[in-house]
Structures are given as C-alpha cells and as structure tokens.
Length: 159
Image 1 (cartoon, helix red, strand yellow):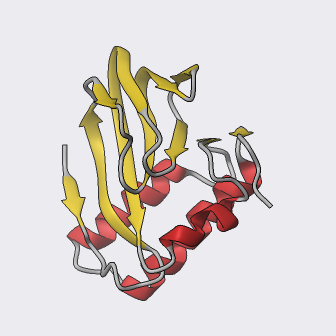
Image 2: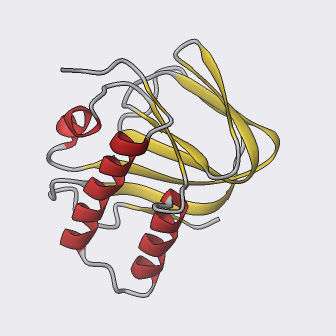
C-alpha cells in the first residue's frame, strides 16, 4: 500500500499532493470534504461513494474526481482496492475552468487512456528517481483534460 506525499513542488502550476496505489480501501467519512482535488479509482472489487445526495458504485476501472471541500463518504461493498491522487499547485483554483465544472466528475479507463496506468507510471518514475517535475505538472494537466473530455458524468457545468 505505497502512498507518497508532495512528490513534486507545489510551486508548479499543477502538482501532486499525494499519490498511491494498491490501497486496501476502508471506510472514509469527510463531512467537510478534502482540501484539494481528490481522484479515487477502483483497481479491484468495488466501493460506494455518497456525494452530493447521490450514491455512486465504483467498479473496477472507474474513478471519481472530487472537488475541494465537497462532503463525501466512501466505503467498500466487498474487498476494494484503489489508487488515488490529490492535486495542488499555483493554479489549483483554475482547475474548474480546465474541467468545465466545479463539481465532481466520474471517469473510466478506456482503450485510449487509463487513469490507473497514469498513476502506476507516475509512481514508477518517482520510485526509480526518473520523475521530472515539469513533465509531471504537464501530465497532470493532460489527466484533467482527459477527464473533462471523456467523463462519464460531469455535474453542474460552469461558464
């Protein structure tokens, strides 16, 4: 269950506050939300998220990006393994413009783009001391763009 914090500088436009994989997910209750954008994705099993008055089942390959301070709770419905990433950086308040929404977004791995692979590859580069901070900041932007363009559900679009 590796988890790493602030693997690149938060002084960059977009940064990783935390990232992890192979996480045996337990119940989490956040009545005040999390202070940053938080991506959680099922890698095995399934889990249930209660957010914005809705119950969402996350199956393998599915994930959700939760905006800062949005109350939510999640728990396993059977054994549930996840990967995750939380984002910060100097332009974090511009993320709603990148996404086209200031609400939560569901995403799913496809043949063209895998959020799971992105997390795995980023962690491998970090663990092998091959991570480049500027490239990773750009990669986070691409990750967010993929969500904006290919999301399963975007809620409450902003202008």
